[in-house]
Length: 315
Ligand SMILES: C[S@@+](CC[C@H](N)C(=O)[O-])C[C@H]1O[C@@H](n2cnc3c(N)ncnc32)[C@H](O)[C@@H]1O
Image 1 (cartoon, helix red, strand yellow):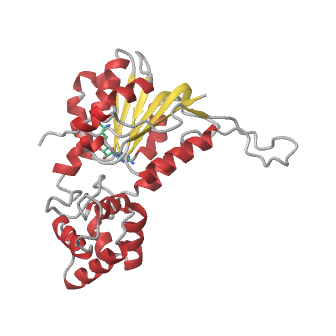
Image 2: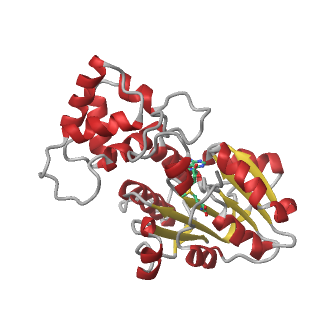
Image 3: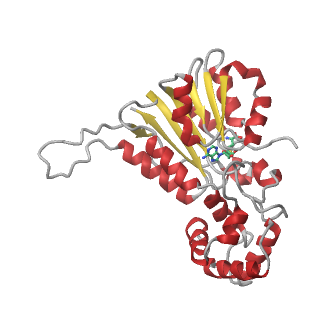
């Protein structure tokens, strides 16, 4: 099965990254390699792309799809929070830009065979990285009702989170929940018919919430954003760009919050006669409000509709 994904806001991302020959970038979410290929086209002949993905299938696909650029790319299978270790290993001190394009690829959703979609009946796994310990089946069959409820409410903003969690516990007392199809049926049974004003499938929010919990997506994003520049020993060259495409309001909130924090200079209380924190501005936000796909792109690729792009520049 070929690996596929339609890169979102491709033109905008590439333009913000300010790519040029000889520059060094980290695409921390390779996916179907669409953004990576566009970056590589602009940084050859002597530029370098560090391509990261926690899904082995994405790396295998990229190794094949990006063959013409073999000497300009270094692959790493793992979580993007290890970017700093990868750079250390490569003896690279600073780079010209970072791209995070969060969430799932179309391939993972539609043909990954890991139960990401409620429209298919597959083993309930949902790990992007198959080396992680806990999968969705484990969480659904072992977490306490309150914990499941919290995941559905916080990550999925699911109005019927309590009913869904209760129904899951009832079902798993009868028999373990092992497939995405079985979980989708349980969720649909738990949500009162006709009460939902939303046009989306009733299981959408629960599946998204579970995926976020399995892959610890928000924790990893927050850790990454926090580490972008620790003040001493930045990995960003002056003028380097950080582009983050998010598809969930909680992700966007983290990105905004962390970028804003790095924009601040002194954080001493106003009553202090002089600065003791010695903090310097690290980033300047180039998008005061997140940029969104054009109507034309949304028509062409409806999955892009919730995308939010935030960009910051290293000062
Ligand atoms: C939306 S896709 C990226 C699509 C890509 N930009 C393209 O042009 O095809 C997201 C990818 O990021 C990967 N991913 C998500 N979170 C990750 C993380 N914390 N570390 C590494 N890879 C991650 C997923 O496995 C997936 O392949």
